[in-house]
Amino acid sequence: MEPVIAEIKSSEYVTHDVKRFVLTRPKGLKFVPGQGCMVAVDEDGWRNRWRPLTFTSLPTARSLELVVKIYASHQGVTNRMSTLRKGDRLLLKDVFGTIKYQGPGTFFAAGAGITPFLSIFRYLHKNKAIKGNTLVYSNKTSHDVIMDDELAKLLGKGYLKFYTRESVIGFRDRRIDRDLLVALVQNFDQHFYLCGPEAFVHDLERMLRDLGASSASLVFES
Image (cartoon, rainbow, N blue to C red; front, side, top):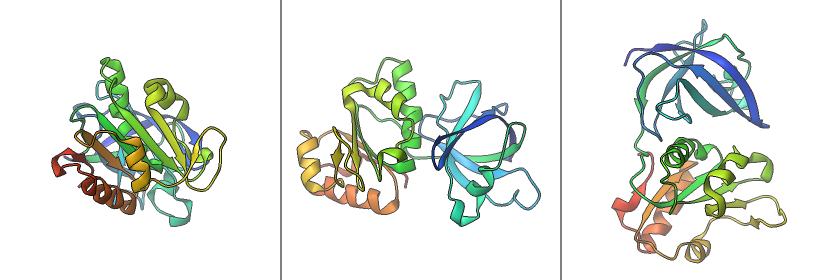
């Protein structure tokens, strides 16, 4: 896919280090919920610096949405994106992604790993098919939770939050480990969707396999 231009229509911070961008949609751009593309800033010195980002909008929406974790210390693409405003432009190419909805199951996300699931949950909700799905969402603190209110509205009691560095009344302060999986998951014969840092996905994959989940049931970016 040759690079196409998407203009920023609006942008806003949704957490202290995560920014939401609404973009014009290039003609002919197609994706399924859970997929993303390579993104670059359409400015001198940045057009050849590509970063993979995930679409969070519905595939049928007139505008595109990206929810982007800003890594200020890296001085890279996302840091440059943090300074962009309405009217600035991005380049998009090469739609990719193996995280696609396979059927009801349990979704495990850490931090910005929630982004491919946002599009999936929105799609399921629109099609009245979200019942039977659970999200287990891990973050360092409550201030790091992305799109918290929307996730609560979409999933209701199927939305479980865990924090690794903070005790919050009413929520659990611990990492997702084997004991927690045993407590949370009664049936390992279901789909499991995993997205987050590499170590998070690797550890979950290993623990779920050990507890009886089949390789075919595990959905993650390969």
